[in-house]
Image 1: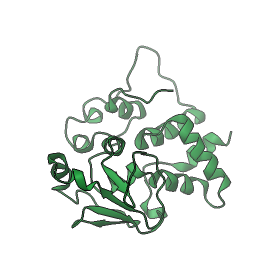
Image 2: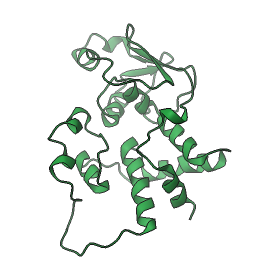
Image 3: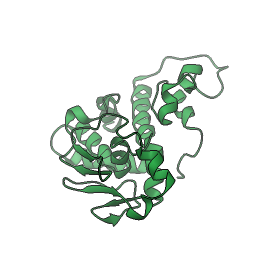
Image 4: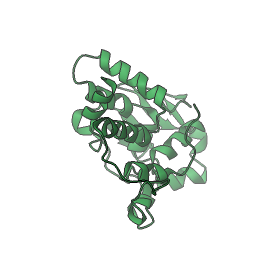
Length: 208
């Protein structure tokens, strides 16, 4: 199945809330949710009450859209979470947070996870000194994320880093503004996880 390449704002309208897929635009009146909250598609049909299954599906899709994960990969994350002892939903979110593209976004090196994915795919970052072009790369405690030295002289690097930090950095990451690098200080704790996602509904969806 191909990756979604359509308008990002359409995904926000589909779930009915902001997913912050467009960075700073999401905080302006240009945001699609601010301008038009109705879902995309034909609205001529009679509205029906969403079933419990529909609510669970919507929450799962919201998590997928937010982190930019395809269905098959998301299912693999769920399989890992079910096998792990403890709170399944919390471990699922930990797996999503430990993705390299998410860490790049959390460190404030870009405006959105979609942009972070593109930067990683283009080879702008290294993990522990080795160029890594895999957005889903699972970070471990002690890993160091750095910009490639050869890219630090380019204009886009200055554009991305001149306003660092743009947002609060979670406690599981340490940001070094002098060298523009980040270190995984620990595994994400419950308070560091994305609070907008109800993991209970996602676990119920996959437990059917």
